[in-house]
Image (cartoon, rainbow, N blue to C red):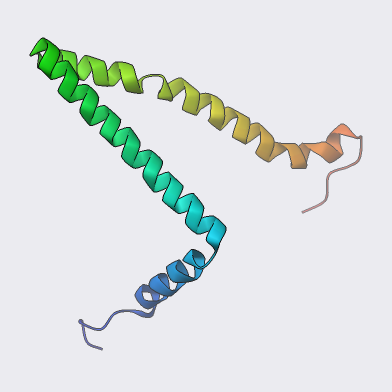
Length: 104
């Protein structure tokens, strides 16, 4: 076997990716995520540039970037907690009605 030849797993990845991109809903979701993340990065770069232009202080650039990104941490924790509860809801529903859980 040649070390230059790609493995079958490496060949399967592009075909799986292209098959997913054939779905228009996924393509729209992927493109909107790309635009949102690009806008977020542009916002942080512009914020850093503006903070440096106004204060001439690298510390203020870092402080401004931290102040802009810090609210994302508790928001992500809250969303993770809600997602965990929603994921456990179908498993807990039969127990709440008084039925027995299935034997696995």
